[in-house]
Length: 305
Length: 259
Image (cartoon, each protein chain N blue to C red):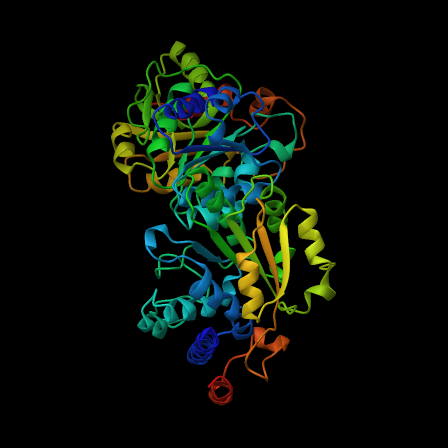
């Protein structure tokens, strides 16, 4: 979905002269075409993330719609104060494109994981946070970001995620029902969606049909959209490739307080500790209890109870 | 004439510091002559839409910017009455939603400089004649972000960008030259590919000449040797005036000297 996002943003440059892309010495090959067609609107600002974020702010103040491309630790962590003061506080239209969401890069090591990025992003007012599940949502996220007048953070995986939606969602701000069902709803964002889909297929064999809901826009949460997808739901389960204590699930619990008919809530995520285990993404998901068997188990615990 | 303007700005700073009982009067007094030269000589502010941009990266000297903007008629003097007070108009560090002419919100060091580089780059890309000026502190030059920007700006040929280092050699807790290997300042910037000019930051002739000097396609840094607390004898080069409150008695003495 990384390419779906970038290609959509780049395509807009054919009829817009205000889009500027800054890479921080990452994304080898991703921008080759763009560099050729629009050499005046691409720059690699090297291994210097503080400068990258502040310069993006300045470019935006000079009238550009600026995309910053880097892996998530270098988009949000290394330069958090620049993002806070220079982009969000000044409320400029900079798009932070973060690659390698969750455990995408396992087993590269803890420094390369981004399992607390939503925890950081949710502290930043003015910042819209989007975590697409597939290329279709990534394209919709790019279109939203291109038109946004405020800062946007887009959290992307990079493992050739397949399409889950058959068409591009018309409104990325809304919860997206991926598969309808009843009683239990599973909410997710990002590439972990594939585990929820797999779980649903397995549950269907036992004639268990939870509602599957993608939540691409984590901040702000569309409250009316949530109310709509919660109709007939008693149990809400959230699953994410992120720390459970500060991610979407934690945000969502506060939203669910307004929905007393939802009486049971489970938030599946990674426990708040550093990861020293050496496993690939699938191995990590199994180890931390966020892969499809755990989703199946959790749904069965609550379905029609 | 510009001498009188500087005195007027300094008097306003003393009034603000006294009324607010806030800190940073010494930091504010040290860059007044630079600001006066920028706003009354060098920078284009008319028409406003095509103005040059000034960013006070060492935003703890906000009193000096507010006082200069008021002197230049860019903000209403009445705004100054609400400086650093409850339900006020202007905060002790810069917020660009509070007043015209406050281009960038700042207060954390090592930010405004880099935002300025981005703006200068944007103006270049748009083939706009607008220029960007910033004042950074000497202590601020200990921030890594400054040197990240310093590495990239020459490559981008940002000859529309000028940074002025307010080199008063008194930061919050001591002298920059004693805390770290600050010197040689000029050689450092030159080695990074900048047009570096060293001047007396209180001498208008030198400030003006440095601002007008042709940087030959490079970004420019003006190393302005200044005196913290400049213009008020008992504040000059005294570390305590980074923090001290200006009492009514201090104010009386200071205004006498600045008459």
